[in-house]
Length: 258
Image (tube, rainbow, N blue to C red):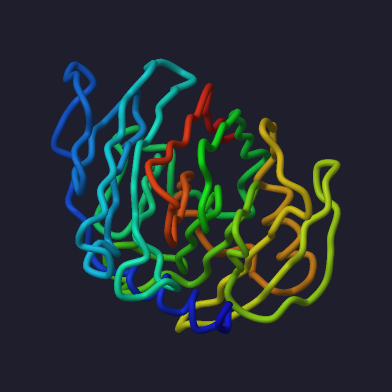
């Protein structure tokens, strides 16, 4: 596989493109079409296909299985290699807070890092017919002040709970850390903002994580100041390519912020 730095720089720069705002509400039913989003129980389900130009024949559809405090959803997709096998084609995900042109309506974020007690999240997942992809959280941070006045975030923190087919993170691996009972390889990079990627050494199908523990590791190591604002939390899958029709099932996803 080509340099992971080149791959992930492309990923994060493309992620910076503005996305459509949520246009459908809790009462709407039916699939969420490619490139669209919907508010579900205060979260935004975002059918993000920002890399589709690299694989024009690819497709994906999100289905809401269950709304409520813990939401369940799945995404069906097929992303051929296309013109660039190393480009991410999509990041279908659930959003809390800010995410490049999207804002969830629940109002729980932003929060200054030093004021956070816990940020607990959990889910269980099944990936059917995996290709080259991850299953991952993506946390965004901004400097003090109005987020709308800042052109780019200050920091990005990814937590990969699963990876398949050789997918790898941006930057240089700096070590292995143990958080919430599991080992993660930490990589650090910079694409105009700092990118920290915690990649779980072994895949898992279910978890409960205190996301604040990952933030605390960076603060304690002097890698992120505690006055930054946690502005957004996403969770989903970045797909480079799939071997045919595939599906991610997400059951009981939630985020509690204290």
